Length: 198
Image (cartoon, rainbow, N blue to C red; front, side, top):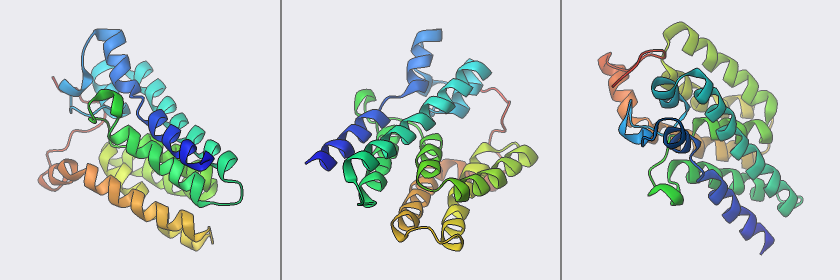
């Protein structure tokens, strides 16, 4: 029962959309109706600026960290419980119950979850993703690369199978949520970081 409660709390925690809240607090807008229409850190940068975007990025990551830590406390030696709590937080971010199930794409929360479950593989994958973003200025491409290569780092570094399979599920989530971005990348129409869109 405690594990079920922890997973539910993970979802509710993930459902807190800081991008949406910052849009309301700072500009009185629904950020999902501006920029790319996504309730995440990248669109927060585009619409609200660097300060709010960095804060949203950190808070979205923190949701994932707290969810996993809660699962570790509730699950004891059962690794599936923190994994499921982390998954619940990502699902909450993507489909938040408080905001009509219209959320972000879950990358920052995914980073928080994966860094807590497997820090070094996530760090190495993250550094490669950051390099790609720096070179191309496509955040979506870096995000997709992160989730695509993370399972290989986890496998290569001998991390538990529960975390490995979870990373595969997360990658599927990421690619599904980035369908429009993938199409724009292939067409050369994807927005680059630092550009503004009305």
